[in-house]
Image 1 (cartoon, helix red, strand yellow):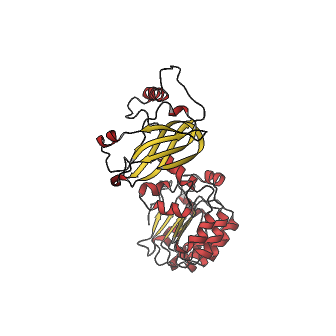
Image 2 (spheres, rainbow, N blue to C red; image 1 turned 90 degrees about the vertical axis):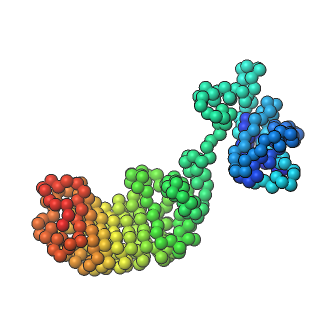
Image 3 (cartoon, rainbow, N blue to C red; image 1 turned 120 degrees about the vertical axis):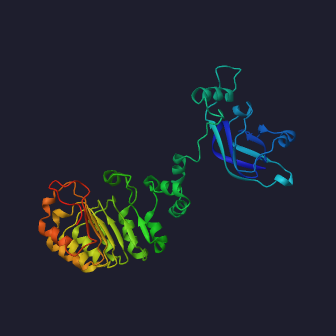
Length: 373
């Protein structure tokens, strides 16, 4: 026997029992009124119990309640289980009580509340197998996201490793609203090698106005605790340039994505100075000073991606990349600027002795330049 107390007092409509071990053990459900008296809501006789053999897999058990019990306001349920030793052990995942704050009666005095619900559900859901069952699907994405809001960050990280679906859902930015990300970094940062705080499914304007994560506090914790960090992805994350000063203390980065952020050229150069193992850099804008710093400090560089690079790049910056012997690809996304910003001399410098050096232009060239050299 088990007594279960709920937060609110209601007139019962439905009781849902999520049985995950030894289903079929529940023999009786009772409700307690305001005077402390117990009233039977559902019962199965011993004869009926043995006529029906419950499959061993977990199930949602939602028996029909007696009409009288639906008129008794309660917040306490009592579950009585089968007493024989064969089924004496049972395990429940949850018990849900559905009800109304006010007593609802049908206009037809001969129609019970359950029959009225059945009739209404049949009108809107004619093909539903169980017309009484209007409970939420606990496996739906909406319900899971609601549950995730109550999990701490460590539990969310564990959940994300269960399967692809949960990994996708745990990336929803709303899941992290109100959570102390800085505290998580402080406690678990030493084990992190990849940290991705971005979300490509949202536009930058949305992130900048609705983010509940204090990124400046997070960035402040990263250098002191994330001593093994190799990849840091902050694209679409809004923080003032001063907030990126904490990243100057990092020295283990191999992949840095600052696309669509407010980091200044000078700040980025100081970050690159302390990260000689940098292999991939993604930024929104690039100039000669950044390319020179890459050629000086990050000689293992393999990939550069920039949205508006060529307007601010000259042969001086390209020449500096000659020190990056492993450089394989430079990608400039030129949807705003024309190729006339890059003169023939610059193209010659790119192609000279660089058989594996790629300059990618995703959009058609207005002056007929080739897309790779």
